[in-house]
Image (cartoon, rainbow, N blue to C red; front, side, top):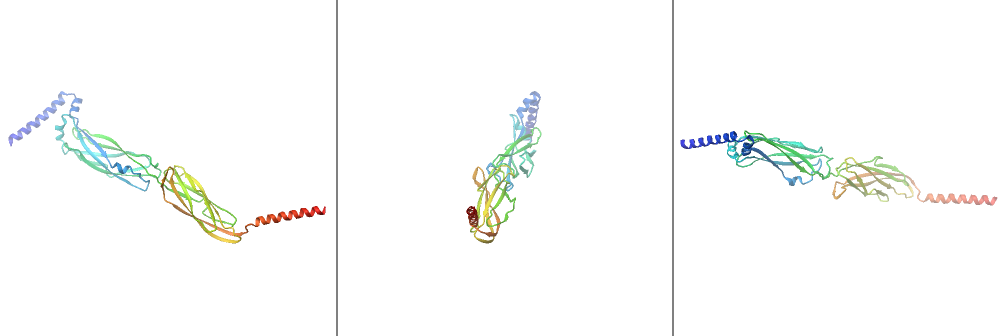
Amino acid sequence: MTKNFKTVKASFVTGIVVISLVFAVLPTASAGLLLNLQSALLITWNTAATNEPVIPRGQLLQLSLNITHYVTRGALGRGLLQFYKGSPVTITIQIIETPSWVTATLSQGSLQATINPDQPTAYSTMITLQVDDNAPAYSQGYIKLQATASKAGFIKGITQEFTLTFIPGYKPLIKAEYPDSNTMQIGPLDTAVFPIKITNLGNAQTIVKFTIEKVPEGWNAIITSELLLGEGNGSTNTAYLVIKPPKNFGYHNDEKTIRISMLPVKYDTPTNVGAITINDFLVESRGFSTPGFESIAFIGALTIVLTLITYFRKRK
C-alpha cells in the first residue's frame, strides 16, 4: 500500500516537473498551444418550432435553449485537465440584440456548470419571445445571444455569439369607421350613401372583401367589392355602401337594416384570411312616393305651353 502511494506521489511530482519544464523551456505561445485548455460552448434549440410563423401579439413562443459545455485541449493538456474535474464554471447567457418589434426574455441568465474532462456537459434555460403588431409579416426575425463561460485556473474562458431566427406571421386585422354614421333618414325617392373608412391594423398589404349579407325585400343595395390597404399599420382606404328604398306609390314610414360583411385577406396569399366582421346599417325611409308623376307633370306642362302658343297665334 505504501509502495503504491509512493508510486502515485512520484508520478504526480514528475508530472508537475514536466509541466514546469515545458513552461520554462518553451516560449509562452508554444506552451499554450501544447496545453491549450479552453472552455467551449454550443447552444441549440428546436428549429422546427422557429420555422412556424409567430402570430403578432396573439402568441408567445417558448423555446428551450440547450447549452453544451466542454473543454478543448492541446497535446499535453489532457493530464492537467484531470486536476480540474468538478471545478465550477459560470455560464452566462444574455440577449444582446433584437429588432424593435421583438420582446424576448430568458428564464435564467446564469448557470453553474462543472468541468468534466471526459465528456461534454449539458444545461438548459428557457427563452420566451413575442412579436408586436408592426412586425413585417413573413420577414426574418432574429435574436442575438451572447454566451460566456468563466475562466477556471489554467482553463481559459470564452465568449461566443449565437443567432436565433424565426418568422413573424400575418395578422389580418382591420377597423371600420363611419364618418357620416351608420344610420340615415331619407325620402323614398332618395339614395343613402354610407362611406366606410377601413384602417389596416395588421402587418402586411391587405385586401378587404365586402359582401352584402342581408337586404330587406324591395330594397336595393350595392357596395364596393374589394378595397386595398397598404402594408403599413394604420393605412386607410374608403369603401361605399349605396342603398335605395322602395319607391312604391304612397306614404312610406319604413325602418330597415342592411347587413354587410368584411373579410381581410393577405394581398399576395388569397388563402391567408382573417375573421369576418359583420356590420349593420339602419335606413329610415319617410315621406310620399309618386313614381311616374314627374313625367306626367312634364307632359302636362308641355301640353299647356303648346296650347297657349296655339291660342295666341290664332288671336293674331
